[in-house]
Image 1: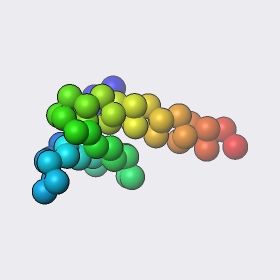
Image 2 (image 1 turned 45 degrees about the horizontal axis):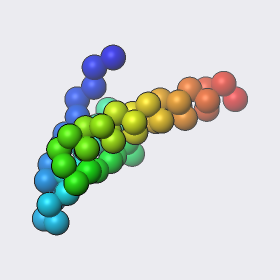
Image 3 (image 1 turned 90 degrees about the vertical axis):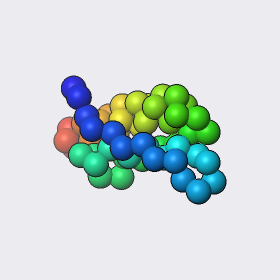
Image 4 (image 1 turned 30 degrees about the vertical axis):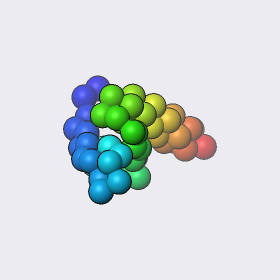
Length: 56
């Protein structure tokens, strides 16, 4: 699955990552690489939560 991810650097220097197709799926990191790693984890968790809600 391919998802569009937006990563921007905030005024404090942190990298903030967002997946527009997954509402509320956000993460951040001190480095760009850390933000990418963190958003991958956030996407996995987001999908797991949505899957568990469908099973109810």
